Amino acid sequence: MPSQGYRILEHTADTGFEVKGSSKEELFEAAARAFFHLLWEIGTDKEESRPETIEVLGSDLEELMVNFLEEFLYRYDAKGLVCTQIKVVSITGAMIHVKAWMQGFDSDRDRELLGVKAVTYHQLYIGRKDDTWIAQIFLDI
Amino acid sequence: MTELTIHNLRQIDEYRWLLPKQGKMRTEGMLYLDRKLLEHVKNDKSITQVANVAWLPGIVGRSLAMPDMHQGYGFPIGGVAAFDPDQGVVSPGGVGYDINCGVRLLRSTLKKNDLAGEIENIVNGLFANVPSGVGSKQPSLRLSKKDLKKVLESGAQWAVKNGFGSNDDLLHIEEGGNLGWADPEIVSDRALERGQAQLGTLGSGNHFVEVGFVDTIFDEKLARGIGLFQGQVTVIIHTGSRGLGHQVCGDYIRILQNVSRKYGFDLPDRELCCAPVHSTEGKQYLAAMACAANFAFANRQLITEEVRRTFEQVFSLGAQKMGLDLVYDVCHNIAKFENHEVDGRQREVLVHRKGATRAFPAHHPKVPAAYQETGQPVLIPGDMGRYSYVLVGTDRALKETFGSTCHGAGRLMSRHAAKKTAKGHNITAELAEMGVTVKGAGRATLVEEIPGAYKDVEDVVRVVHEAGIARKVARLRPLGVIKG
Image (cartoon, rainbow over the protein chains, first blue to last red):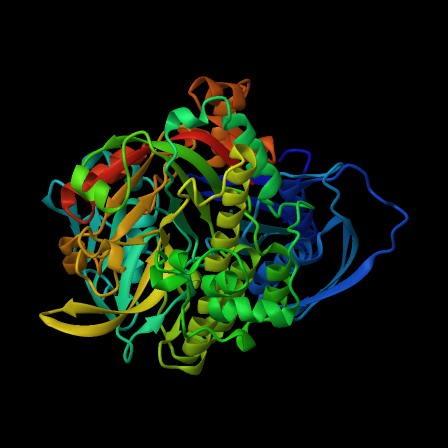
């Protein structure tokens, strides 16, 4: 895997990625990082900003993943916010609890790399092999 | 999850391939392809997806695929399917995330030569006036939620009522630019918030505004009938319902997953989740989808006004003096109730078109008065370097495909492959050499959308023309393009 910690999965009209982690928390954190890396190039991080607590629900791990990543699409589209740093605190039952460092997108400094419409269930896979959690996620762009 | 492997395609004629009923398919499929296009689709899952659509309850007639078919989410792109309003289902995957993504075409009284020396100014003007909505390129218009709901209720009619365009525009939009069964009260707050930030914006990806000219006329009489002539300057606008539509689709895919389980639907793909048309959830999706469709109609109407304003700035002439009239506006991601003849009798069906365009023939009651003799104009954009087509709907399309035809070129290369191909190339300069001035918000979009990344739209159009499910009228060549 490249240094960003994800692998691109592509077919003609699809864009997806694969991430791994040694726990569910690590997996979701890696998925978020990969997602942000595909979406944006952020000029600087405002380290001093305080993290927001975000909680997202889903009826199973797949739905939780879709809802979790969609949460950041919504914040970007509706509020113009991008995430510069993320920490998954816990995944318990149907809920993921994260701390996210959010800041406003600045078109002079930042770049959108990929216009993502949605996170999809298409070929969505979340599973565990031995001690490694693996997720494959496809985006509608 | 089970998946059908499709090996049994039967060739009917040069452009038709029957997908026999097999496994859990409730009906057969029909693919409109020539051998060359079939080679493209053999390698993805789109044929399986045509079969998957045929699993859905209450499907009427065949599960259809247009020649620009390729793998989508749930339904294939290029998929068309109709459902019984009483026994059938509605599926957000049959419409797609970009609800009422569509195309509109403006004509003018200007000729190609009138643009000489001005194309750069027009492209720069369009780029400045049409917000992409990407990052902080925000629209100047920001409505309250209350006002946005009026947009969702009446679509392009809201725009015209508020001074953006004329009643004449409304006569030249599919469904008059307004789906009447929209209910803004069931659209989520999140969808509204995404809509507030993005009304009047183009978006990124394959969305664009293109200034071009008529370079070939295939049918003089039809071209005259829809007001097109050789060398005429035209403008194409391609965009949809932006984040509002994406959110509506996502919201209902979430809700309908549970509904599908509740009704015990046997689905081969989660993205095919659906609800009975007459169920509360099915009706709610349709009412929310109509809101997103209306948002898209209004969005294209607002952008049209920005295009007119740009031409006025560049030429110091009124838009009317330049005859910047709307030829037509078509949806290519939509579900609608329509009357069709099935097994010899007229009945109402819910037609899903996902990456497919309505193509109604002359004398059809849904075709505007201006096109009663020609048939409904069908607008097929190609990639940004080559050409786009204007076609009209036909009787054969009405009989065979629920009055539907193709919608575009379809990708040939993955985005990653396009990037690789574009590496070391100056795309803007190469397009300029081809006579096309391009301005895009980011190089990322430009390299992913290079002409070579798409099939030649001519290959797609030839199939629909030869198969008789649309008729070629004219070909347009681009001169200037803005991408979000």
